[in-house]
Amino acid sequence: MPVAASAIYFLNLRGDILINRLYRDDVGGNMVDAFRMHIMQTKELGTCPVRQIGGCSFLYMRTSNVYIVIVVSSNANVACAFKFVVEAVALFKSYFGGAFDEDAIRNNFVLIYELLDEIMDFGYPQNLSPEILKLYITQEGVRSPFSSKPVDKPVPNATLQVTGAVGWRREGVVYKKNELFLDIVESVNLLMSSKGSVLHCDVTGKILMKCFLSGMPDLKLGLNDKIGLEKESQLKSRPAKSGKTIELDDVTFHQCVNLTRFNSEKTVSFVPPDGEFELMKYRITEGVNLPFRVLPTIKEFSRTRMEVNVKVKSVFSAKMFALGVVVKVPVPKQTAKTSFQVTSGRAKYNASIDCLVWKIRKFPGQTESTMSAEVELISTMVEKKSSTRPPIQMEFQVPMFTASGLRVRFLKVWEKSGYNTVEWVRYITKAGSYEIRC
Image (tube, rainbow, N blue to C red):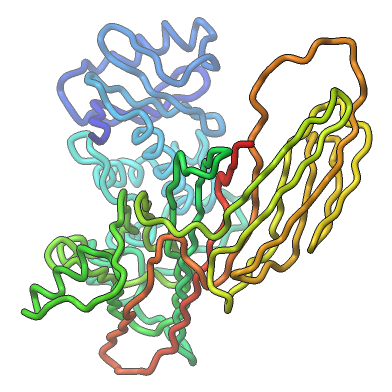
């Protein structure tokens, strides 16, 4: 649950109250005396930012020569409380010309009281966006003479923004060329046994966008997820098209996404922010297409000699290729000498990480490469302990490939002026924790 603040205090370094606001009646007005006596006077300010005294919790943070203290009487969300403090300070700075200290508070206490009434209601955080608040709290703060920050201009035509509908985008944006860039970036996490069986596998992905669109456009994004396709077929009263569908897990959206429409139609509809932003995150646990399979063979001939053979197969289409492929094979610390034979790329021994490092700049699809290495070890008197070897690690990037199979079915843009847009869609899959036991 969000933080339910009973009161907020602004104190100077001596503990004097500069300004305070009581939001609930479940704490007394003298609670700050407990903070001053038990924390400030005992020099325990730097130990922990959260203290509990007499059934109340004090959450405090120092900014310049001011302590901001939030008092809560119930079990509140501490992370939300500190997030609120950080954004509130940023809001005050935008009004005061970039300065927030004891002098700025004394010079602007009327404005601060007005802002405190807007950004928190009955102890619950509200809108802290400077761009929106400046639309209806137009009073200018007393700026510091040392501030060189220019005065922010008010945003025009903001009736829709004041309602909270699209507070992330201002009106009046104009571009000569209307373009839209969408990137689907995925990271594959794999743990494979030495016999080639998959022990754990998942994909974490995110959809990144860059919008250079004029006006106030409305976008609609369709993916080949199972729920979305089934919902579309129900609405259109026709069977779903054949093809691969995927099930998205743990989906989180940017605040611009219309969740009501997503719950009813299962389509991602949104008015995008201007510029670059992260539209959504997701995770896939089933039906993962592994881009590479690694087959390692390690033989120990004696205490001073071992042989390493690694075969890497690319499983993706022959029309694609991987970039920056790196295979790291751990070897014992007492490695003295190595010799390599590779079918592609280059290999060497890196003593700083105790690994054989095999690098391939460009790896085509539906091909395989092998590395053979002879490793000579320094003979030691210490008896060798039987222990499992660290896993082989792999790094790569595969453009225009998604391990989850996620694809963009459509990306539509509506704007009242009816301009034409150019859409660009890219896919890329990277290695997350890609490990093979040997």
